[in-house]
Amino acid sequence: MINLANNRRLPFERPRASWPKPPTPSIMHPLTFSVAISALSGDCLLQPAPDIPLSLTDWQHFAASVAHEKGLTPFSAPVLQRRWQQGLADVAVHDGAIVGHISCMPILHEATRHRVARALNAGQPLRTAPWPGIEMFELLTGWTHPEWRKRNISLRLRQQLLAQFRAETLSPQRLFVSVTVGRGGSPVLARLGWHTVAWDAIPYVSSMIGENADAKPRPGWHVVNHDPYNGPDIAPLVDGAHSWDRHCFLWVSHAPLAQHLNVQLQAAAGHNLERWRRAWRTAALPTLIQAGYLPVLFG
Image 1 (spheres, rainbow, N blue to C red):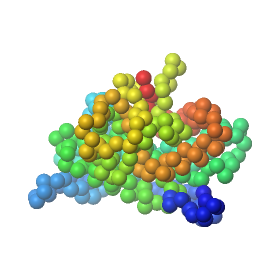
Image 2 (cartoon, rainbow, N blue to C red):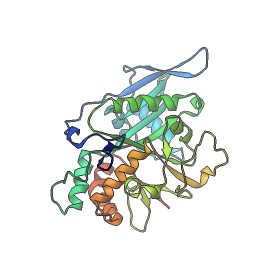
Image 3 (cartoon, rainbow, N blue to C red):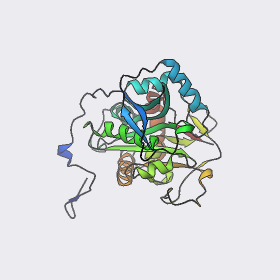
């Protein structure tokens, strides 16, 4: 959006005329790394190892480990394996076993955007004006084997996966988000330069990945005893006194872009949050669930 008052453009925007038309998505490749230990620092180094074979049994062992982590959404082995095969995840492997993992799930993309837009417009074709083409992705299942934690594996896996996504030019802008239950991976996200945003500050964005549970049975990951965090941005690397265990935190890769996307979605829904949530829940979310996604359900 160009500010006509001073002819300045927001730093994260392109002129509308330069927005590319969505091309056919390119094929992203599975990312597999072997773990090496630096003789000098003791840190773990990731070395590309695309030829390491990973069987369904390997993924079943990994899925079982994730299911035991109370702060992670449990996913089945076939779902986790499929994300990796599609280039939506990367893994660190040592002695044939998965010791580190992170995945990235497309949330707001061409298919879901068109579905929710048609629901909002009573089945009419997508109107271009309120939809700038911003895509949103969620980092999921950030896990490191207990014996390999605090050795920078999680940070480096995230850096590698995000680099693969950012190397593409499918969209003018890509917003990445992540949810942590308690402290979880917050220090790693902070080291990436991400920030916490109050769930209520960007409700049109946050409702795509989480909402309050109600009496209706819905597929999702139920988070209990952790309220959505609606306070100011926090610094987990220094804020040791913060009460992490009571909240579920929303992290974003670029806070101004998250705010801008929220404004755009608000305009598309006619400033009606319940209308937006209903359209997303009924028209777009089933597509994600079919692909193995589970939104957060609070309470």
